[in-house]
Image 1 (cartoon, rainbow, N blue to C red):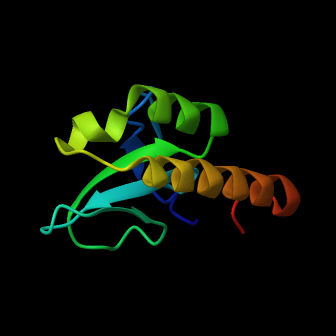
Image 2 (cartoon, one colour):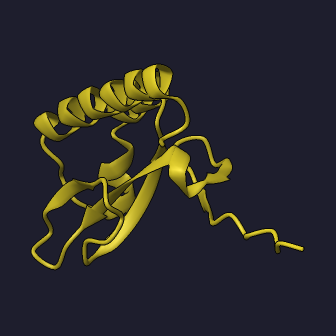
Length: 100
């Protein structure tokens, strides 16, 4: 009998919901205080997760959520890039199914 694998869960920083890690994207702040997208989830630094949902990404942009989380001023370009990335990933999921 095959054992059921545990699904890693992470908390969406905008909504506060716990979701499977594969449904989220990691945002990371490194030691140089640079904030960037981390699609692999393996970059060094402090991470926070956001759901792959355009509305949630836009809400994070409007509220400047990651400025508060990482306690630093983040340029508007980062939020624009985040919204574009989330939109792209959401479109991929619709086309190809659940991340496979």
